[in-house]
Image (cartoon, rainbow, N blue to C red; front, side, top):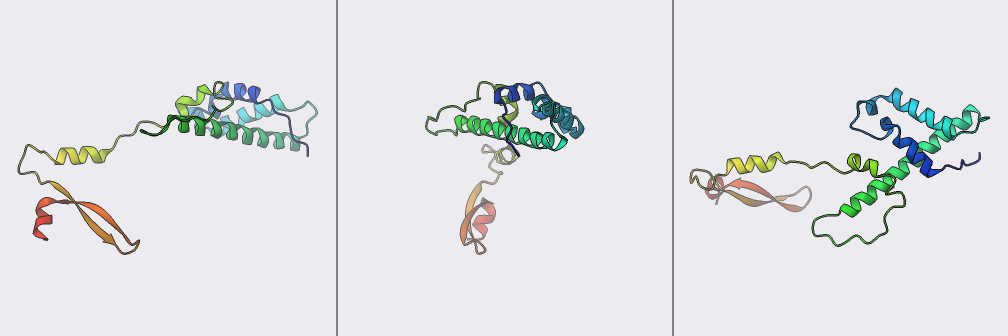
Length: 162
């Protein structure tokens, strides 16, 4: 079995022209038949004229594997560059195909999340109202894992147990 020589730049541009392969926001992304058709088109583009069915299957697997590797490396690079708050500067050279893969940025970057927990506690705790109990964090020992955990406890109940 000979390894196929795949032009990565061409693969990226052909995948970009087929959003069902990469854009999770589109309805076609969930259509397996549509995605399979797109991969078959790519196999026909990259295969030689006299390729057998087995060679085309092998090429299809290799194209799919190569694309997944390219996409994963790009997403890893983007997320590492984004970094966490307070983290130092990221000094590694950018991924080779970063400029070519910019169309994936909106799909790869994690969405902003909201926490219902913050809203729950902020609405429960009104600091201006003396009738609203204050939360105190009490440590509990978890014998199963051998660690102490902190749990919020209302002040009134906590004081009754002392």
